[in-house]
Amino acid sequence: MQVRITRDGTVLLTGPDDFRRFSILFDPGARGSAPAEAALARVARPDGDAAWVSEAALRDLAPRAGEADWQEGFAGMVAYARGRGWVDDQGAIRAHIETVQAATRA
Image (cartoon, rainbow, N blue to C red):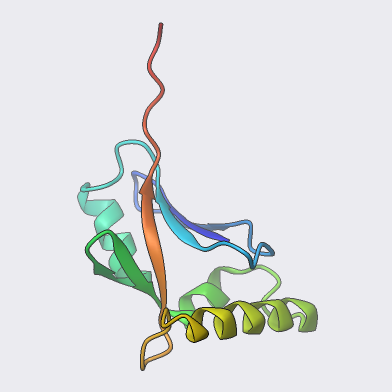
């Protein structure tokens, strides 16, 4: 699962059923732009090269969040993260931040 942030500040959840990975991905040119940074702040608390993502925000973004099998998979992901110290006292989940580099033309 990946929280994707576009340059215009849109927040999307890609791979919402992939409970084996978790990160935040900024589209090319998005990192540092005011709309994208504001979008990040709506769903997470930045912390250097990572951020603490609100569990509620993930549920709001996931199209299948109300389904039992999704809830079970998500609970397993959170339990795994908690066991590694990647869940804080407020229930936010730590995610590393990645930035897609713009493709260069040859």
